[in-house]
Image (cartoon, rainbow, N blue to C red):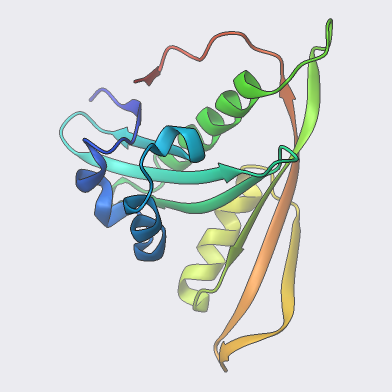
Length: 169
């Protein structure tokens, strides 16, 4: 079964709808050109969408992970990690490299509010892709079971002029 990382665009966004947080999908729906403001990546398993990742870049180059989800039957197949690695390669391709510079550190962060049954596996996945700092944001609690949390990673990216072959427009 061939898996392919693809850009999520206006034309194919609807087929990834169930794999994107509703609030993020609504935000994307109001944007004219997705690729100018967001990193929107989907992974197809040959017959249907299996995973989606949405991020944006701040003016200082930091990345915000807004939504990442892999369809339940496809979990533990490395799809989320593959999308995350594609995000890092995309960020590296857009980075303003100094002459002769081979790499640099970027910060990736995310904010989330999940029940423990979802939070614990999400944080395990975050750790598996390099997130190493986790926070509870003070004063932000929706009920006794959920708190607003944040996580950050500082990852080393390498200079690249071309995207990996598995990323298709």
